[in-house]
Length: 286
Image 1 (tube, rainbow, N blue to C red):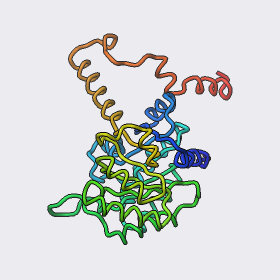
Image 2: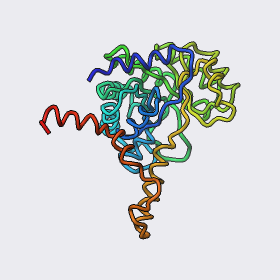
Image 3: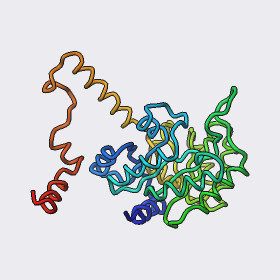
Image 4: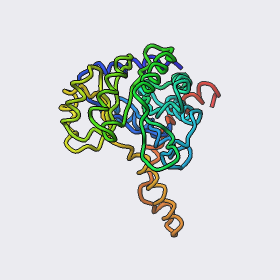
């Protein structure tokens, strides 16, 4: 498949003057639904990958191969640019190169590489960060591994919420100087931090959601935020729906009386049933 057009569309978002909320997707069906609803970009996170593939919390237990395979399944099912969270690149700078190669082959449009020490090391303490120098090495390795120049490499740090604003800005400036296409700040808490970040670098900004006072997309766009996450509620809502449906059946509710079951028309659209019927008629004579 040709992934370059999607990457160009994502670059157009970064070069534009609007802020977009991505659709949090985790499998082919959720990706199709996001496209049908008119989203401009999809987001596949490490946390949702762990839930989908392993049914486990976000502890970096998933492997690169498992993550890349699920990203490919998503990309094959829809036509939106897909931004993915590649965590720390699954190891050191050489592992980062392998990560970029695998995810580029899987069709992603953009990927983030962060400077967190992952998985969590032995002993007390929280999520430690690499030195800036090691982080620079990861970014350089990611850029060197890229073969399609349209693939977007995004630097990422949690420093804004874990160390200090000054440390986060120092990291962002160092990674931007290496040539990353955008920067993802995790943990921005207020407008003061965002304005400091926007003043420090001149590349597009991606940020996580949840901070109070940072929901105005016009304001975010004015600070060069081009993508603002809102969280990953869809997969959690899906888990709750599965629980409620199975519990109702276990409790004796008849299938015809279940709540929240989609219509046949909804499922036909999400699964592209009309396409398959057309192909069946055209190629199988049925």
